Amino acid sequence: MFKHILLPTDGSELSAATIQQGIRFAKSIGAKVTGLCVMPLRHTLFCEMEIPTKAQEQAAKRCKERAETYLTVIEKDAEEAGIAWDVFYERNDYPHEVIIRVAKQKGCDLIMIASHGRRGVGALLIGSETQKVLTHSKIPVLVYR
Amino acid sequence: MFKHILLPTDGSELSATAIGQGIRFAKSIGAKVTGICVMPLQHPFSYETEIPMDALEQAAKRYKELAGTYLAAIEKGAKEAGVACDIVFEKNDYPYEAIIRAAEQKGCDLIMMASHGRRGVGALLIGSETQKVLTHTKIPVLVYR
Image (cartoon, chains in turn orange, purple):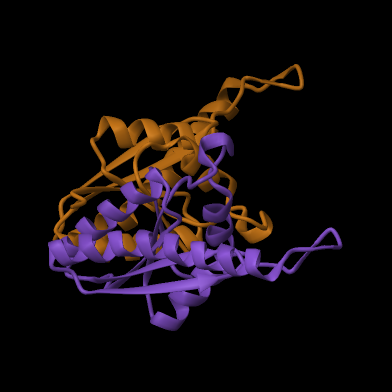
């Protein structure tokens, strides 16, 4: 029934566990996966002080490197499981918007996401981005703990 | 990967859709399903006014009948799809508690439920019971829209 699963990652332990289960699940039903990592934008103006271009470039580079590290895990696991995969990286301050947009663009029919991410279980209920994806997505969402 | 899916119903249109998809999903992965309907308890006292016993009995009877109708729909759907099905009727003022307990007792490894139920999309985010199940369960939850 599900053919294409979106696996958002923020590199946290909980999202890593979800990715493992997501790939296992995709393999068991013969679906493909798309890994997605969204990193924050750096703003040129911070409290009205301009951030030097060089610092911005460095930040961009670091974000990209880190995203690649996280996405490589998905690539590697998917490769080992023998399932079709794709990865996507974007910088945006609203991860849930990107998650929903990419899910639509890539034609995903399920989003599998951890109940909490980087900010941990501090959010007593469920993680804030997961909550926002649940609120705005028209695509079914599998919340993993 | 998933072997036993819990399908909570409150008889609403949205939960009927989630059940239809849940049975379809169970069939596609060879899982069995358990349908559960949770109805409120009857309290003999309400703001210190006693409610006549026969009114309570009538209410209890009516709830049971309604639950029977909702659960019969699951049984019928599962039978038509050739999916093994079990049903549970519970009385509890906190549906999410009954849902989580039933999932644990029956050994379900996935709860599939609608994003909203009887109270509709009035709850701007996601339905309150769905939210509470997501908050308290350790079992993955697939939220269907």
